[in-house]
Image (cartoon, rainbow, N blue to C red; front, side):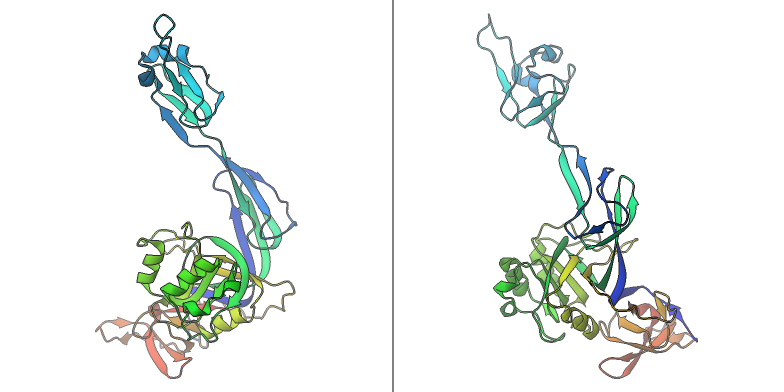
Length: 374
């Protein structure tokens, strides 16, 4: 049987999900293999060095840098409070002394007798990594963190912004083709992961943020609305660190595009259950997809995929078309011609035939589809 391979998005009603939770710098791991954790469990913790505040103390005292160490009231390694006297000049006949107060709280890190600079190191900042998803610790990474495993329903999106949040799923739209408008966002959706249908409008996003929703998931978004929400254009860097007060995930693409029926049905079927959402996206090397993870306490038996390989395109495989003129349409592989076909552009390429959900069959280049992984 003819086969091909392509990147794919996972949309699964049951997946064995593994989350790698690691610190940015080495620290202390707080869990052990076999531990059961909740989303709010601290997996690992470390401390980052505080900011450094430089002060030109010699200039402020009008003294030579070499005389500065003898005028310091606080020594290297001593703590100092903001506005506490840090150094004092000798004055004239013991009078008219000049004092310099610390411009920041912290610890005196260095006093230079060559530049006259005093460096104050701010307090260390604690950094904690949470489990994010409930589950079982299956691996501990020494001084880094741990790997958490959980049975879950999993939906990967095309694009997202915002960090990790958790909340119950609240269905706002009744069908995957329905646009998400502001009147569908209710006050009781505070703290929820709101699931829309087609394009999420700018007013709906603003309303969701106003009611205090955790996240909004829908089929598409207008790029201008996304820019207005963030206040700037996005490049090709990693998202997920935006401080925008709301995590957004689109499952299909940009523009007027409905959520895939399979994705909508999966999320709607878990209405009221807690979802763990992460909008982080990376489209360069080391692709990172935004995802919605819904932990399942009593997981059904895993469906046997018959030895299918991730990304494999074979007859019957579910796919999404990712380029015009059929962008966003869902279907199944109906044919994999072995010979390259002549395209409208005049070039030749390997193609496949897709039987669309909405009816009809189209022929598209194999590079124009991605598999929807189950």
